[in-house]
Structure formats: C-alpha cells, structure tokens
Length: 280
Image (cartoon, rainbow, N blue to C red; front, side):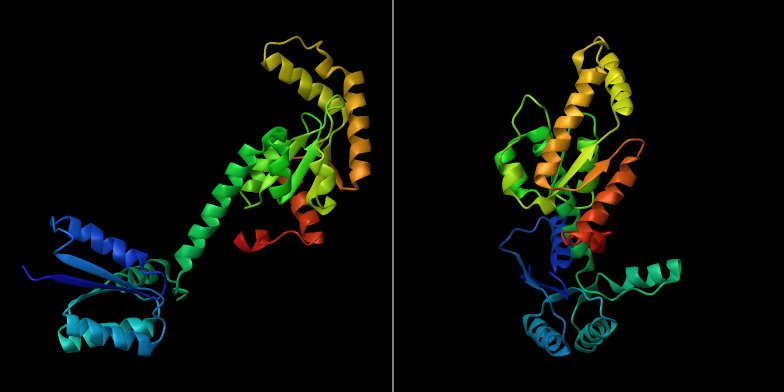
C-alpha cells in the first residue's frame, strides 16, 4: 500500500480536520507507519495557502481542510481540482446547508468554536471554584484567588448566588459570618471592592430557618431560628460589613436572578466585571 500523507489545514487550530481524519483512518486499521497527518493551523492568507497546496501536490497528499473564508475555500477547491489533488472540504457543504435552512449568512470568523469552548471551560472552572470554596472552606486560598467574595450570615443565599455567578464565569468564594467564629483575616487583606455583603430581614430569616430545621427533622425551637439569635447575628454582620466598607444587598423577597443582577451592576460600577457581559 502507498504511504498515506494527509494535510490537515485550517484557518483556526486545525483540530477538527485532524480528528476527523484520524477517525476515518481508524476504520481501515492502518498502523502509524502507514500514514501521517500534518496539521497546518492558522492559514489565513492566500500566499500561505498556495504554499501548502503546492507542497501537498509534491507529497501527493490528501488535502483535508476547514476554511471559513469563502475565498480561501474556493482557492483550495480550484487548485485541487485543477491539479488532480484529492481533497475533503469539511466546512463548505455544511455551511451551505445551514444557509439554506436558516436563511442566514455565516459570520466567516475563524476559530469561533474555540472561543465558545474557552467560554465553556471558564464556566466549568468557575463552578468548580464555587464548590471548592463554598461556606468558608480553605479561606487562605479561596478568598485570595476569588474574583468576588460574598459574606453574610446563614440563609442569605450565599451558595446559590455563588453558583449562579459561576455560570457567568465568575470565581466566587463565600464566607459565613458567625459571631462565635473569627472572620478569616484574608477578608480584611483583599481589596474591599471584591467583597459584597448579604443580609436579610429578621422575619424572613426566622421563617426560612424554621422551615430549614423542620426539613432536617429538628426542633423549630432551636436557637438557630430564634428571633433574638437572628437579631444578634444581623447586628454582628452589619458591624463586620461596615468595618470592611463593602456594599450590602438585602436579599429579602428577592429572586436569585434579581440579586445576581444587582451584584453584576456593582461589579461593573467598580470596574471588576471583566468579560462577564462579553461572554453572555
């Protein structure tokens, strides 16, 4: 059998052309000594493409390509047809079908899927971060590495807000405020712009905590749900937040989405919103 040379060419990283070629070759049981795939990423000029086409012709290679630029794609197709070079265009046919089905024109932006992938992986990393540093876990690292730190007493929506914001690619750590437990020193060491305090009304907290105890099969008379204890915790948290000088949001009767919107507005106002609005 003739040695098989494949050129995997793309105006992005070329991973699609390479992986599709590998998947197809695997169906023929070829050994690594019988074929070789050369990947050529970021081919975005006619000069670069022409050089590759000529080299592929010399190597009698199979030319597999994903080129979103119509001019480059046509150039590759015409060259291959004129020079008897075997080709596989992985992009044009599906784009044409999607044009017909959607009535829209493609953006023609190379590497767009990779940008989508990067956004996805940033989101996953943020979710993992929120889980890892939930409820004050490992404050020495979590607080310092977080893009946002939420502080508040129990049942002020710290965890659900952390997860919601993580889905907006924000790495959030949350820290519970308990009168008997010292506030992690890192809270006072980081930029206060990165901290947002959460509070709630005594009535709502009393109701939420009472229902929480019932759900756990515990007595609703526990100190945790008593109004005096709640007022003590609220007073304590208010002192901590004033000392830090951070903005405070009352989550009473607010949906998670509404509170998250307020947080995003605060982050934007303080100039720490990064790519939040770009990615969504």
